[in-house]
Every structure is written in C-alpha cells, then in structure tokens.
Image (tube, rainbow, N blue to C red; front, side):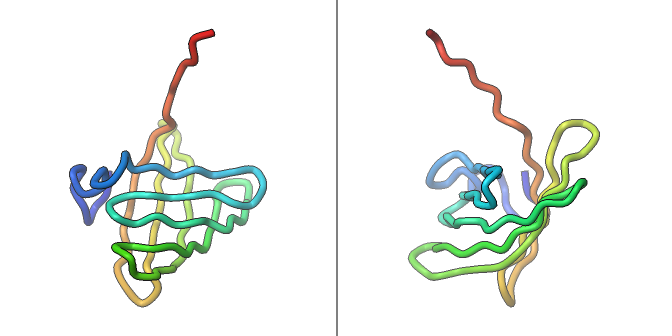
Length: 98
C-alpha cells in the first residue's frame, strides 16, 4: 500500500514489488516505474539510492526501508526533486511443488 497511490496504480504494469538483495543491489517496481537499487545496510534499516524509468522517462531518488514489529516493511521512497511516498510491503510467501 502507499499513501500517494491506490492499489490499481501500484499494480498497473505488474504486481508491485521490492527486492532487497544481500549483495548491495535490489529492485523496485510499481505503477509504470522500474528501478534498480544500490543498498546500504544498518542493524535496523536498509537505505538506498535508485535509478530507473517511469513511463519512458529517466528517474532517480533515494529512500530507506525498515522492518516493523508486525513483519511488514515501511519504505520511504523519494523521487529526486519530486514526490515522497510512504509504502508498506509484506513478505511474499510462496511454495514450490517438487
């Protein structure tokens, strides 16, 4: 969920997602925006800068993500010289049949 956008917008092109890798890189996608993340880690949060495309325009910004007590993640996501949003995410659970 997000404070600026509704669910239909978040899932406009594909289901909204954020991937945080252990190797200092990740990805985020929502609406028509897709971006790569450069990550920095601390004990309580992950900070990031990001760069990508939104409706064929180059965009960039920064933010941070914090794991909350209820298992959700709160993400502050800011466009360079633009909007700032608070996003909430929960870990996707999936099972693979063998």
